[in-house]
Picture 1 (cartoon, rainbow, N blue to C red):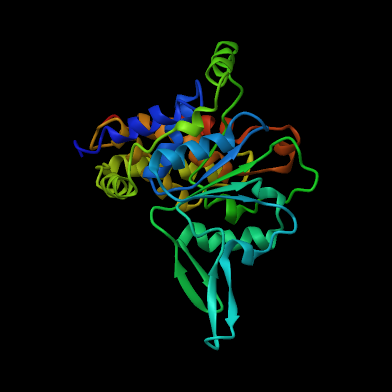
Picture 2: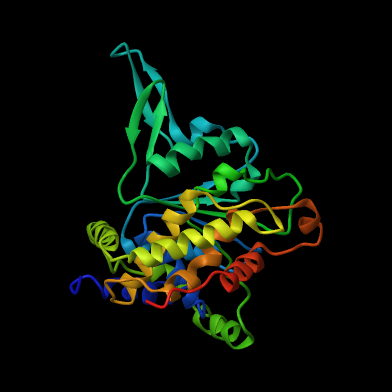
Amino acid sequence: MDNLSQLPKKIVDNMEKVIIGKRQVLELVVISLLASGHVLIEDVPGIGKTSMVSALSKSLGLKFKRIQFTPDILPSDITGFSMYNKHTGDFEFKPGSIMSNIILADEINRTSPKTQASMLEVMEERQVTVDGNTYKLPNPFMVLATQNPVEYLGTYPLPEAQLDRFLMKIAIGYPSQKEEINILNVYKESNPLDTLTKVVSGEDVLKMQQLVKRVKVNDVLNEYVVNIISKTRMHRSVTLGCSPRASLLLIRAAQAKAFIEERDFITPDDIKYLAAAVLSHRLILKQEEQLKNVDPSEIIEDVLKIVKVPIR
């Protein structure tokens, strides 16, 4: 762990050359990477969503593909298709856009439910099935999807099963005035993304992902997470609470956070820090709460206040 524990900080430092003043958000992305998870970025245009994903791929030196989701894009454009080769007399698999390490699924809610469904196997099982044949995706593999929370015309809301595949849902947010002035100065002559270099290899990422799994988790903290998840299912404002997958992913994210902070154990604070990002997008609120524009993260905060924090 000692040899690799400094690498997450290097990734964040490198990305921060491009995304100014959003270190906490960048750390959440790196936590998701080390936890082998995917990220949904929901925010308004022009705040650096695409640049952030590009900065991540350049920092890792991995293959990167951007898929611009539109209503007319087909599942085969994502997964690939079989084409007849008249010279050999056989059908050959032509890989789709998904065959890469880092995928930017831009405006994922603009494509049809049929195409959205093609991402389910990809994100959960890291493979695609075409004409009965299964093809493994490159490793490491991560999907970072974006959607605009304001513009709903011509969009298809992501179904619960799709949302549940994302480890975290995050927002970058507007920069402060000081940060925005800094952005103008940094980007005045050139785009720092053009000169960004690799700081970590794909092999290093795979090793860190394995080390994250070895971070110790006390049985008391397992019980704490399960209590939090159970309370989301019983909350008065919720129609559907978090699934067991949410429990697994919250623990794994906490392990990744501990690894980044050079610890071989997780704490209740790790769980509380990550709870809103990992759990809020998995809640389905009652209709009256939706009409009131209740933020699901507020419900997670309520749950954290109710559930007793373990002392040891």
